[in-house]
Image 1 (cartoon, rainbow, N blue to C red):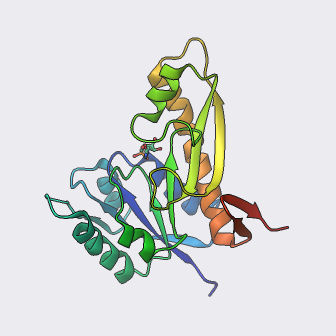
Image 2 (image 1 turned 180 degrees about the horizontal axis):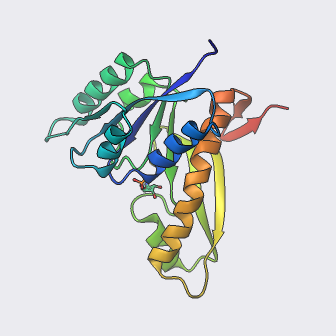
Image 3 (image 1 turned 90 degrees about the vertical axis):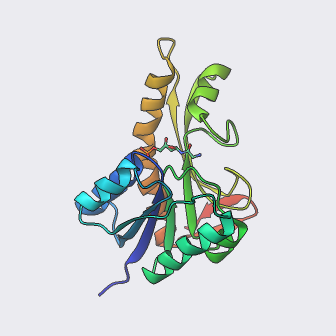
Length: 204
Ligand code: GAR
């Protein structure tokens, strides 16, 4: 049997990016990988229920005021117990400890709803809308020790229309997120790239 990359999904909310990835795996559009486990820091995250309805293992690990490193250790243990190769942050709204990042070097991906390095942090779509940019988009990147900073794997753009408000813009960006994340995962699984400084370079 060919090698399957095992994904560990971390989410905090509705989980539409997770569902897009799961749909693309089910349809065969995203090949050579499977979802090993879905984890959340929020027990009431709708994405966890959606995962269970699809028959996936879904576990909540609430932080409950614990130290970040300690909470992350528990998550790392679960990821390892499920033999996770690639960690996918899909709307996981909690910073990772250094120990977590070092446990999976260049094996943690994040999606952010802006064209980084513009508008890192919270409410990126609102930041972009307020700034008055004419082009917005999303970024999938490797996670490093700085917020929304690691090497960029994929970006997709959308226009900002004069008729937009923040929700219509966020929706247009989200549609592209659902494409971008699977594209980026496929690129990383292929292994057909090298990283030079901050640059992701596909191999010929
Ligand atoms: C997505 O828009 C994702 O880019 C964003 O949270 C949303 C999660 O939606 N993530 C961040 O802002 C991380 N800095 P989803 O739960 O429907 O996938």
